[in-house]
Length: 224
Image 1 (cartoon, rainbow, N blue to C red):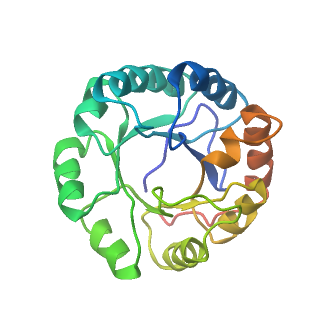
Image 2: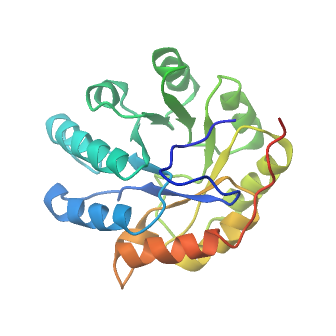
Image 3: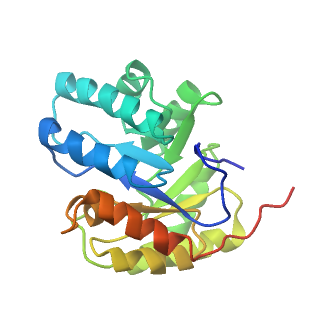
């Protein structure tokens, strides 16, 4: 079973999966990211383009990879195998369809992580998982965020965690209260985006609070 790296022993509870903002200015965002990574357990950091051009994205991706790995997080690049390779990321997150996902698995497996996103239906989740991905991600990153996790995200995560061994990620909303319902589905990871970056008390406080919530939910041990 796929396990994201951690500097601490892995407890049997869901772990935090951070996603960078839909748009950001690197000079302003990097200090926020540093604070978040230092505040508590972060299993994974998904680095998205954030509206940057290729040159700027490659530069900031390389910096975020260094920061995330130093903090014990696996760092994935969204939908760009070339930049993922150049930045020495731990893998790639692909949410642009089956053809791109197959290419990503051929390029990165088995030495690096490949995750599947952009999932809208149960059938699509099973079809994408058949490519040999390391996780499936429920919740659409191209939609505007709402305070609560989307109902379909919760339903898909609940269904998946009951039936399949491949880990799943459930995307929460902008309100940190959404962490609990996501964790209650049995998802292995709970993803947060603006719930962390726009938290009134700052990203570090958000990470601490999210981890406190996640620690109260237990996951079933994987069968040997």
